[in-house]
Amino acid sequence: MLELRGLTRRFGDATAVDNLSLAVADGEMVAVLGRSGAGKSTLLNMINRLIDPSGGEILYGGRDIARLRGAELLAWRRQSAMIFQRFNLVGRLSVLTNVLTGRLNHPPRLPKLVGLFTDRERDIAIDALAALGMEDHALKRADQLSGGQQQRVAIARALVQEPRIMLADEPVASLDPVNAQAVMEALRRINRELGITVLCNLHSVPLAQAWCDRAIALSAGRLVYDGPVAGLDEPTLLGIYGSAAALSEAH
Ligand SMILES: Nc1ncnc2c1ncn2[C@@H]1O[C@H](COP(=O)(O)OP(=O)(O)OP(=O)(O)O)[C@@H](O)[C@H]1O
Image 1 (spheres, helix red, strand yellow):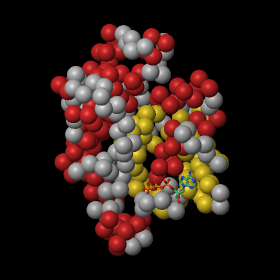
Image 2 (cartoon, helix red, strand yellow):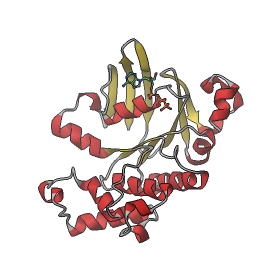
Image 3 (cartoon, rainbow, N blue to C red):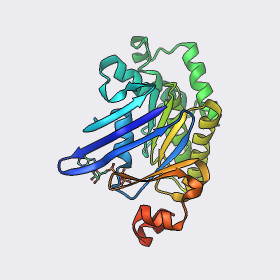
Image 4 (cartoon, rainbow, N blue to C red):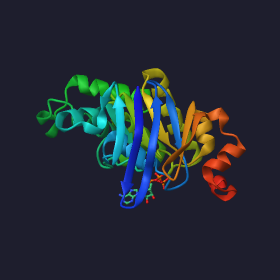
């Protein structure tokens, strides 16, 4: 279980995440909603420790993640894989090689730096591509794929880290509706079939309602909703987004 207690991040005088407390059970799929600037990215970046909290605790399995250093911090980053809006694949490399780069931080590291992956690692990478319906594309150059396919490869690259949690920051924001659905479906599948906890920042309320069980919503860094996506009725959404205009942008 992931538990946040009084989690806070300030940037100068501004408070991006403000005294946030909540728990996420293993295997949940949670949408993180809120207007632009509400603190969603800061939240995920703190969980992965790309950003250090100003205060509060991030507990996973009873350990305070906010205090990890060195090898323990690297191990945590492997366990809590991040997905970004930009897929950051290397276009001229094959899909399979891109996925294998997700293993670079797994020991032994030296052979991998010169491109030597074991057969087992190749099997893990192929399995990850298969879990995302992408195994037939393994030998193509990454830049030959559509945006949605590239994002699924990026998710496969994250999967080979063998994470417990997937932190997805606007994973479909740059995709057309068809590709956005395919990527959300892929996240849902790895959540259900592999039991990986998914926290997913989304700009689209309908996508959250279609693919997630639970939503949490932030407004100016504060938690303003935490409950089932079915509870996101019009008055609740107006409260989260502040105005009908802001809400209509989230549809
Ligand atoms: N490195 C930084 N330095 C200063 N302020 C920052 C920094 N990162 C975030 N902020 C501020 O913190 C607040 C929350 O930003 P954050 O990016 O977490 O919001 P968000 O909900 O993810 O927004 P978006 O949906 O636009 O990505 C904003 O006011 C932002 O300007």
